[in-house]
Image 1 (spheres, rainbow, N blue to C red):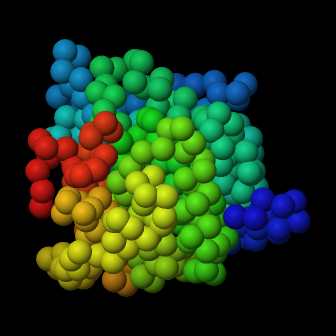
Image 2: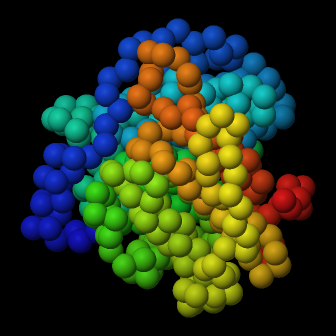
Length: 353
């Protein structure tokens, strides 16, 4: 993203016209058996809301993984929680879920930017400032309040939340073991919105590497999106995957095109029974270990794949698509932060698939 005042202002105005928004959804009672706690965390003088879900399967003496799920524009942490069904998965897999939310400034923004992470603000792309710092501060807060395995902290985001996930992967690679980006774009690539073009992926990768600084490390990446998405076209989401691979190569060798191949090691077309076809591409490091994965959902627009089938939320999920929550967790959960270095990014206990 060009952070010059003129171009940045134009992009913000364009985003105000067309950025995707999950409209305010009706309240729905949840039947999840765990504990749901709401609160606020102060970051750089601003209060940010959050929801923390602790599954009934949680045991303090056994540190649990933490999944951070960042919503998109026009929606809230509560709505993202109800749409994604992450809590149900957390019960089965025994992990904690944090749903960060925005501050009062973002809640007061008009139109499609209402409830939006400030991806259009250059401050949000740097460590210790803006919304990037707020998400990291909420993550640290959750880690302090629950028994969390610091090697198994993961983050995923959709749409504007996906843009923030690409920032966290770079600016806070010391916190998150692996990241997921859904229906969105890579680091500083907000201009890919609606155009499918954005900034060159080589530049995006270099800027992300620079943002890592002395904390540079391999960060495995998962992406998922629909090829009928008009907000963030599939090319944007695929670029997000390539940006992550290129940045990892810079960490390893100082060049973007190796040693990790930018071409998938395997491409498989799958079909959800009674639902959509989708293509899964897997990328492997030189030792043959999984380091990147993309899910292209054929015919899906800018919505959450799978998720709740509650009729009150119809239009905000595509139940014909595979579960984005399960797909992302299956990838992310195989990594431990300290074990993503070469020769094999996957933790030994995670095995290979």
